[in-house]
Every structure is written in C-alpha cells, then in structure tokens.
Length: 315
Image (cartoon, rainbow, N blue to C red):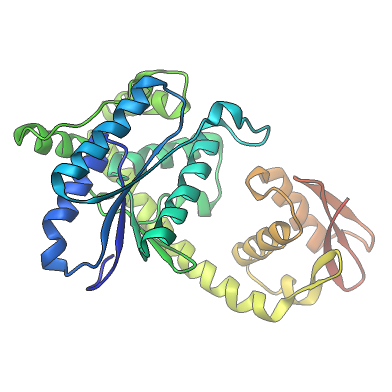
C-alpha cells in the first residue's frame, strides 16, 4: 500500500476508525519513510453542531500531533439529487474533496479508515439488493484512480479490535449518532441483520470479507481479459458506440458483460441501474435476435443489433 517517499493524505472524520488510522500511520511515518503527511476532514452539513464539533475535534487532534489539517464544510441539504441517495451523494462529495485536497498537498496516496466490518456490511447490502460480480468484490484494499492511490490499511481489522485499542490507551474519538439510526439500510444491516446471522456463524464478518477477496481475484482476471479484448473490438464514432458482433459473440459471457457495461458507460447510460433482466435481454440480442432488434437500457440508451454490429446510442 505504501512505499518510501509517498506523500500521504489521511481522511479523518473524528470517529474511532479514522482516529486509529491516523495514530497508526503517524507512528509508522519514520519506519515507512513517508513524505509529506496531512489530514483532510469534510463536514457534510447534515448534522448541524454535532458535525461541526467532530471537525473541531479532528483539527485539535491534528494540532496536538503536529499534522497538517485541511478542512471543508458543505451543505448537502441544498444539493439533493434525484439519481443518488443521501449516502451516495455524501460519498461522491467526500471523494471529490479528498482528490482536491490531495492535489493541494501533493499527495499521491489517500488513506481511508474502512474496516473489515465495512467490508462485510457492503457485501451483505449488495447481496440483498442484487449485485454483479463486480459489486460483490466489495471494497478494494488498494485502488488506483489516475495518479492517486486509495488505500484501506484497516480492511483486515474488526471495529471491536480498534475500539478496544483506543479505549485501553485513553485515545479519544467521536461517535456519530446517525450510525445508530435505523433510517439507513447500512445501519439496519449493521445492527440487526449481521447480529442475527452471527448466531449461526460468529465469524460471519470474516467469512464475508474472505468471500469478497476471492471474488475480487476472479474479477481482476476478468477485467484484465476484458481490457485486452476491448482494445481490439470497441469503436466510438459520432453519437454511437459499438462493437462487431463476430468479436463479442466469441467472448465468454463474463467478458461480454464487462464489455457491454463499458459501452453503456461510454454511451452515457446508467450502469448502476442495470438489472438481471437487462443482462438477459442483451444476451438474447447477441445470440438470437434479428437485425434491427433493440433493447432499451437505463439512462435513455438503446442498444440495437445491425447486420454486423451492436450499437449503443442515446434516444
């Protein structure tokens, strides 16, 4: 995750996970020979004075540790989205801020405090809602995005371990009361569904995390093969994006799906809204349908079969 000389930006909310992450990386700075080291903190504006106090706490902690601190306040209540839930909008806003802060500090690495609990909750949520292999691969421990490397150093640690460590050393942290409210699906998974299932397997969170690792390895192979095939196959011209039928038919189904997912994204469609029914309709379009047949996809994109190609375009 880290190499000598890396400039690191640590995302700190003030909660136990990010506080532990900051203390852990701070204690390892010399050993890992890290470069510039800084913290970023975002107040989403959703919890009023409580979230302001979280930010003040994070700022004071960084002052005590002698760590550079970058902060921003937004008001997500004024940025409602018809396409994104509050949680998704908060995540999108948060990661944009992280990348802006990394640009400002020259950081090449952004560290976040995702734990094994977060991984297990994510996998279970996606399973319940219905997800592809890509989704079931879960939270990647390391993810490259342009020149930035996102790392999750705590992804193998359970939250209980972190809490015990902090409490044993009298290290203060903040508690977000919204994590206790059952209005968010993740909270229901965390507080009701996982404890119920742990009655049948006390190691459930570890099992779900292991499952995500196995699936991530499988998906990484598929993604590499898709990239090789896609370079030869896909074509974008004018307002249409397409692929030769003869090229895509010979690909395994798993790779066909990833190529079609990329094509939909390029055409301006909504990849996250693809359902199992959409996949089966596209599969039938490739295999059996006549020239001129089409399928409408999320985001106002239509995929049409011509004599030789599959073409995607906005309608």
